[in-house]
Length: 327
Picture 1: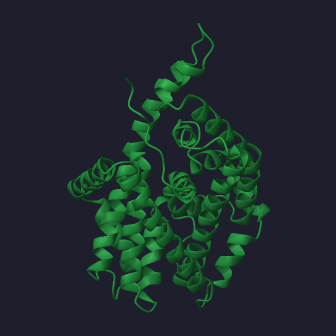
Picture 2 (picture 1 turned 90 degrees about the vertical axis):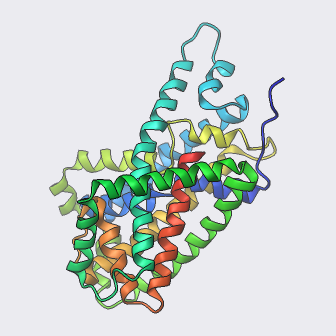
Picture 3 (picture 1 turned 135 degrees about the vertical axis):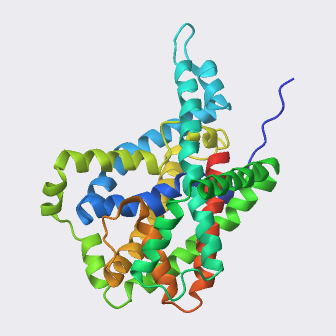
């Protein structure tokens, strides 16, 4: 007899866990540097259009498939597909895609873990913008160090999963997600009012057609559409898994809107943190994947109890990323 499927303990747990699967490097890490590379506020507007027109409907579809099948993505299609069809092949593609994505997540989670220890130890204290940037370059120059922290992040992820769905994944996600959201709001307020941050807000919130033409309109559109899918973790079966935990008394479209809204809030807030700091501390907003690692330590160096805020931010980001990979 097949084991009974474990369910989440509360609707809040479902919303935070589902949103948490979407929230992570796609919002806090990737979204700001894409905005920096592709024209500021104009990219944000195009991204929001794709999020509403394509992201939410596809997420609703994945939720529906998961709730109907009550299975993992590999087995889901065998339950739902018409006899003789080949839709189950996508289940194996989703399985492979999640493993490939895990290679990406574990590396960045290792970076977050390193920055947690570095911030807690006071490594960045007293450094100027150039000194903070050099710390990231030194980290990247050590492959053995990268491998070690990546391995630690994987072990932590397996430990969380070993505790089970409710006692492990849901319980840890609730605490870490709420704490991360509160810290981000505090950091956003601090960045908005820092000296020199106004230019960053204008860059972030004002559509700039000159920058779009410079980057190439189709390139901007393509990256905005890709980000809308990437940030919601759709197309790989992850949201179908969460759909299997949704009761039939909840509207799937409403749950999709809730998850997308929370996801967008985090992405937007991360921009409010990053771009004022870029212009305040002289960091190029188009610095790419290193952007948050070259800006956030500067913020923590110039705020009360910054060492504590910084350590908490990076450790909670590690927790979100670990849970993302596991589920």
